[in-house]
Structures are given as structure tokens and as C-alpha cells.
Image: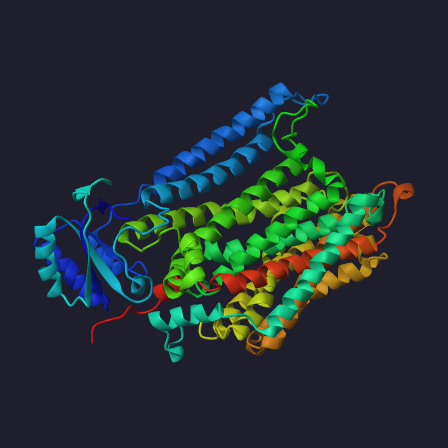
Length: 182
Length: 439
């Protein structure tokens, strides 16, 4: 799933150079409602799209902070509620509790990272609703453009100039709209 | 990636699918033998539960014996996976890409096997939940000042984080399999791929999550085995109460883990024809890392002895002399030979590029690292302060059955993994290749 939904066309390319040409054509005409599909991330694509830093890092930070706090809270609660009195020693002991806090920081940081990834990438999506081509995970690239009938026709003729090998169309009832801003 | 193999995006996919072809007769024989091994282990554990802990060789004073030895061994084996997948990723080491998936599988499966040993050691495994931080009828709660509780938290966290890293890392490759297969396989891989399409948004969040998971897993490489070592070092047993234990255990863990990765990679690259991905250069790189870890463990052995002498504690001196010249002398000299002397062969290019010697040394190091844990645990407990309380561990068949079962389970899990999931990270191998270009 991408940052857009609704009717779209999927323009498939056999080479990364043609894909980049396609992206540049769209950018030149200020047609920006598109997503790029590739088998691997590539710096040439990133260079064209200028992606913002992923918000996943915020999830990692919040998860880590939650785990850290939970570690201290859990050990404090355990000591206060189930005191194990050993002669001459303080009931609360910072160094061993720090170990639990450290471990839980990592545990919850990692779990929150995964949750952050799935939420932001809009996964899981057990049935792929958008147009898709099986070559795209292997050795082909694609531009998926979202818009209404007129805009899609315009973009289709534009992309045909950039060396596309095939164009899939997917029409849906709902109007095209951006629903995920980042 | 060596250019002589002419790898391309299409070729890597074809090779990936090739690894998942229906298995040969040899594979089924190996799986059957390993399954029998697992049943032998289950029989051993079953008889121990039925007849009691007397079936194991544990006694007073040797209350921690082969189960804890094997637990520490398997946790150690797990470490190289995270080292290769996370630390080498953060350092952008290029040769890591084809190796790390198998190394991560080693981590996950070794931890699964390791996790069984505290339960086996408990004697009453059905009350294992007493270790968990949940209020109980008995008004008990885990003592957070105990290293055993730190250990539970550390190993559980390590298993969770490494499994997450392992599964998430496979997503784009599973999507390739979804797109390559038809019928039931397509449905299964389609479910596991979770709808991955490789959009720029997905890659953006995926690569960010991957970096953060690697960064979170990296301190675990150091901390988990440090915490395992504190199970020993926090006690006052002579031979255990050492500040060097944490780095000593971590280096040993990585040493044995690298050996296990080599033991699995070498036959795997032959069976699956993966010579284009797992080249002699990759194997030699792992061998070079083993030279380094051999020096660290060798240094730790020397420092332990030096401190025993320099510290002037007669109990500690007694234990160390007993280790070297007592009835367990074979364990001590064996570990020194296997862990330190044998990997020195890798200084020569001839040995680190020879499949026979790579396997020979790796098997030797695995034996040596198991011996190291045995010597640390058993010799220290059997020769503590009071001569009237000295005693030896008595090996039983139950222990042997359970250890056979643990090795069988580990190799069984790895072989099943190698036939159903991608053993080489295809998308990361592709990243290092030139993408399809015009003209």
C-alpha cells in the first residue's frame, strides 16, 4: 500500500535508467501523486524522491523509554511488595535494577520499532489490492500513479515516452485521495 | 561479489528458487537421523522427569553440571549470528550480505535449544513460571538482585530481538518466492510476505527499522553473554569469582559461534550450489575473525592463571592447579589446544581457504568451547574450599541422551529452515550488484 489510494496506473520498466526518466518526466510536469516500486532500495531512486527520515525512529525512542521506565518500576514494585530482607544490605539496589531496565529498554525498543514499521508501511496487507506485477520483486521497476480518469490518461501518455514496457490500469470506485501525510 | 560468477538480479532469484527444490534422498535420511536424535533426547528428559534428578550426573558438590555447560555453550553459539547480522551491518562490511541469514538462523535456533536447558536443569519444569515476574499464590516474586533472573530477562530479550530481526530481514525475499511460485506455495509465501510490494514508502520505513533493530541488537552481543557469565562471577566459588568473566565469555561465545557458522555454511554452499555467493573469500574472512577471537580467549586463559597466582588466594590457586593437573586435565589442555592453538593454522592462506581445514578447525573449536564451559563449571564446583566437600561429577547416560537430543534439534531446525526459507539474503546481495541498465 502506498501513500495514496484509488484509481491508478502501474507503469513497468525493465531498467532503472528508464524508471528514473519516468520519475523526471512526472516531476517536470508537477505530477507528484506517485509511488515507485523496486526490488531493492537504490540511491538513484532516493536521489530523485528525496525521502524524509522515517518516523519509525520515534517509535523506537518511545518504546525504549517505556521499557526503561518499566524496568525501574517493576523492580521497585517487586522490592516494595515482596521484600527480601538480607541483613545489613539496602532493600533497594540500583546496579542490578539498572540491568533489568537496560534489558527492557532494548526489548521494548525493538518491539516498538517493528510496530512502527508495520503501521507506517501500512502492512500487513494479506490481499494486495493495488495493481501489481510479479516481476517487480525480481528485476523490474515501476511507477504507480494515482488520479482521476483524465489525469491518468494524461500521465499514461507521458510515461509511454519514458520507455515503459507495460502499463496496468486499476479503476476503483472511491475517488483518489491522499490519506497518509508524512 | 566476484565478477567471474556474472551475478545479476535474475540469476540471484533463480538460484534462490533453486535452493527450495524438493529435497534429495540424502536430505530425508539426514532429517530422519536427526529426528531419531531428538527422540533420544526426549527419552532422556522423559526418564529424568519420571525418575527424578538422580538420573542426571548432578550431585553435591557438582550441582551445576552438563546441562548448564550445554546451556552456556548454546547461548555462546548464538552470538556470532548477531555479530555478523547486526554489528557488521552497522559497519557496512560488504562480505556480510550472503552469510548473515544463515548466521541469524544459527542465533535463533541455538537460543531455542539453549532455552530448554534451564528447564531440563530445573527438575520440575512445570513450575518454570516461578521465574516470571507475575504475582503468585505463594507470595513470591523473582529476586531482581539475582543474576539468574537477569539471565532469564537477557536470554528472552535476545531471542525476541534476534527472531524479529531474522523474520523482518526475510520479508522482501519471501515476497520474491511469493511471486515465483504457483499454487499452495504461492499462498503460503504470500501470507508470510504480508503484502510486501517494495514501494519506496515500504523501503524507507523498512531500512529505517532495520538500522534501529541492528543498533538495538548490537549491545545484546556484549551484554547477554556478560550476564550469563555473571551467573558464575557473582558467586564466591573459586574459579568463578573473576571480573574478567564477562569479556572472556563474550569472546568465547563469538569464537564458538563463528565455528558453528562455518560448520553449517560449508556443506550448505555445496548442497545448494551457492559458490557464487558464499565464496572462498567469505569463508576466509570468517577464519580471519576466528584468529582474532582465538587470541582474545587465549589472553583470557593466561590472565586467569596470572591473577590466580598474583592474587595470592590459595583456594583459587588450588582450583587452577587442579584444573591443569587434576583428573580433568584432559578438559583443560583440550580447550587450550582446540580454542587457541588450532585456529592459529588460519594464519596461513592455505589453511583458511581449504574446506577440509576450515571444517576441521571449526569442529575442533566447537569441541573446545564446550570443554571450556565444562572445565569452568565442573572443576570449580568439584574443588571448592573444604576438602571434605570435594567430589567429582559422574556422567550418566541420561545426560548423554539429552545432549545428543540438543544437537539433533539444532541441526534439524536448521535443515528444515534451509529447505523452506531463503538461506541467502537475496535483496542484500542484489543491493551490491549493478541494477538492470539501458543498453
